[in-house]
Image (cartoon, one colour):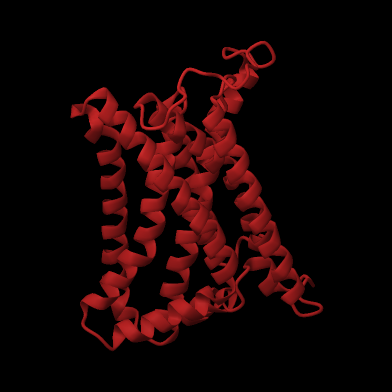
Length: 302
């Protein structure tokens, strides 16, 4: 439940910040008449995301066991790829997110009336589909799908409240620190989903080696113990992994965490001297201009 809560919180917060930027900019340039179109696009994105989640949950029931395992394994790998891309994209594009979105709004206004609807749908839909796919992959490997889904929904609800608080100036958190640490955490969660996906593909005989354990930690971490359940729920931990699962986990974590930490190191070196000072912009957002845009909304509303 904790892993899905953090997934929902992080993805929901990203979507909430994007919505905040779009609304703030439209208000700043005096185009509040386009709010309705933007919300229609956001509503479409939410509906599509829920549809993807429902399709992933109930769609495979008509398939054979082997087809379900192949589908589950492939989608787990896709989920890992998407989340990994999202972690690095946020780390490299976060600083220019506000400027990029404002440019997209300007371009959409100059096009047809549907362009704003499409902008809202694509901006939020990307986060929604990523969340649906990753939560589904994580919940599929857990022991309690209902609890896992509830955790994701609770995380999204928390993100909505925090995003609203930020836009109103009621909440001040260091989003740079938040996204940095949740990025590291998600790498470990994604590694667990990768292990689960490899296991599915081995059960379907796509990858050899199913049933041959690399080692056994059953005596150290019994499957029925509270900590075994906790590790399984958060990181898809299995006490008896196969060699393919062990190799996949080690290779993914070693490469991804090294690249991620290297990216953080380069970003810190490029930061101007004194940027780490606790200015209001710094505390509210990792993206210069986002806090300004969000405050502009308040100014425009007053």
